[in-house]
Image (cartoon, rainbow, N blue to C red):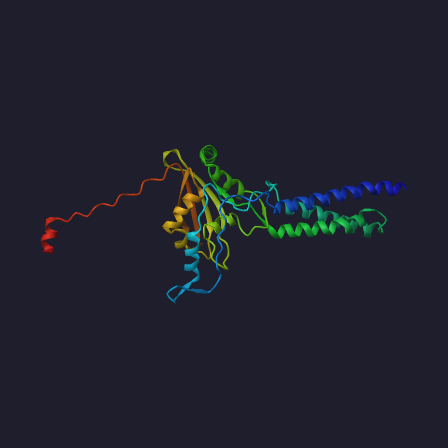
Length: 292
């Protein structure tokens, strides 16, 4: 009876650890509530499509046509909703994997060195292996935080002047995520930057800097292996960025590295600069006489 009284709390503790691990892993995958932000467009994944005139158009052109017609809601960046638990400062996968491997190794060591007389060996087989498998599955689905390049002064200015959307983006991409294909995956899909049957552009880092007029800018730098730069920089699509990430900031597209296929969406607080007025062409008398 005495050894049974000692084993009961151990089983209860292990069950609590298993339950906490399952709860944490489920919370990392499950959004709290659906967001009323923009819905991602549905693209038809077909090699080519017949037009009304009887011809064919490419997948990229049809994808562009469809995505440009999709309206977006302002002030949004993530249409999947926010998770109930945000993992910051450590990797949930590594923590659970460490616990699982520790339980399993301890149980095997006790089994071989004490001839299985203790109670930890059975606990390792019952709890250690499942926890280890949970850790491996989370490790496989883990998306590490994106990098950030910013001086202390620029980061302090960002915290005081950035819009709520810009703050949300920074908060979202600088934490571990689980089960997502990429950081801001619903954002790039809503903006029509994911071609059918192609990989998502992968966010590499954020660059925060102070710009003229005391404003602050945040550049989201993506590696876009499949979506060409011209699709990112289309004038109509840039206007779509303004609506999607606004109000309170304006967007522009910058080519960071053509060799590495790095492209950035730069969000700057304040009002967008006025477009340059085209200079009227005035014909001189000599040109007029020459024409005559």
